[in-house]
Length: 292
Image 1 (tube, rainbow, N blue to C red):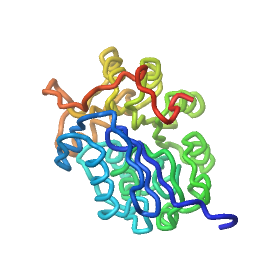
Image 2: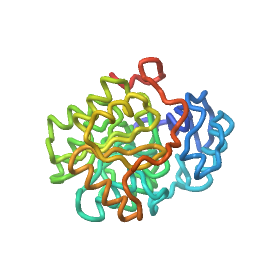
Image 3: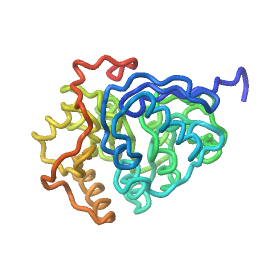
Image 4: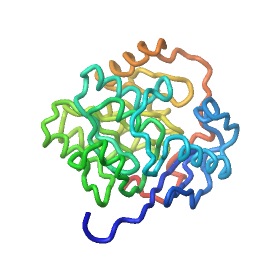
């Protein structure tokens, strides 16, 4: 590595869309959450209400438990929840439905992974990554030739897709947090790419339409516009907490296959237990410009 080493700093838009900053293995900043309640954290961590104190406690638990944002990072894992994006993609990879996935994770930024357990380990318990710095344990596992820049660890899913295509992967998934990326990926790579929206609470009405026009799989997160647009689309819905939508034929197959493997069925009108409040992005001003 040449030059001045990058500062050990990792920034997330974490639980409840609160800004969280980790430096040198310590939580140094926790912002105010925009959500009061998340059913996933209620189910798995008993979090009745999202507060800065509860967020800090959870992030510090993750640092202790699997080394989040530290050189103690556990990089491989089995399914964490029975059904989520990383679980869907890991299963699809194991079954040969995709050859690789372009993801973003602490310690490497945007990376190409081809191992299901590595994909699950890096992505299963993080969300909303905005900025990260190199972790050698992660770079060793992923391979430095599978990240955009092992010294700067940027997050750029379009460049990651370019790398995956250049490496010759015939069918690869890309996770996106911006509608424009979804649109550009579809125009550039057609059906050779499986486009998956993640961390989508910030999406507005126009973004929701763009996602449904281009994505194969969409996570609803806490977005009201995505839920409204879903009513107008011929899609498959999974879950009654944070819904996942199978949009294209490819996306529907991947979602329903993972549901079946988990002993579950598509959503059929069960009572909803959703994040609160659902967000209308036109009224949400955030510290990162998702729509740039």
